[in-house]
Length: 246
Image (cartoon, rainbow, N blue to C red):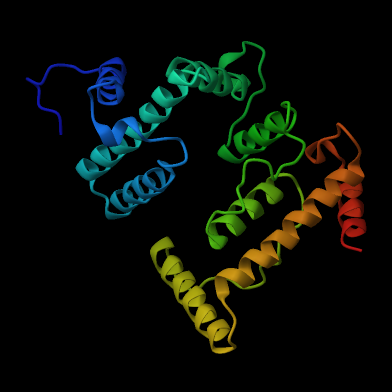
């Protein structure tokens, strides 16, 4: 952790270091990097931050988030030199987004929300009305690991009031830790059964998730141009879902 006698540093200080590395006379490796060449680094640093989080190691998490911040500043410097955008543009854009999607906090006459689920539903509804957001599936890259992709897609569909695969079983266990262990066993055993049939579980799950995504999009198309599926009445939404599955 940062000691009390260490001089305070800012994002501007980090940008200055990155700019020096990429300036003429700086580091040859840093100068030749591009948005594309840094893709593996961004992915690796993200996984390392997640590992620190899983381990509950606060110091490691701080360090790994710093490495992620380096990736952000590298991309910002590359974009600035290419005349695309700057780190200030990134910060300004995300501040505007956070304020816009939290009217219950930043607007005097904003809605009163009491639960995290209500906030998530409002977030999705507001996002669906933004330019270029013609589907609740926007922003979920199919290149995600299949399990993460399936989970994220199901959560969005559920918040929008669309059917999600039935959940008839209840996980064994008296508390969350025991239920998590039971879930892990079920998934692990499912992988073993699927592989024993000569099928790649990752490929199979991705294919099924893409079919589910496509049905969501057909349902949204049936709702009509400019109509968010979130705003469709429950009964009509169910009818459109059934029609999209035909």
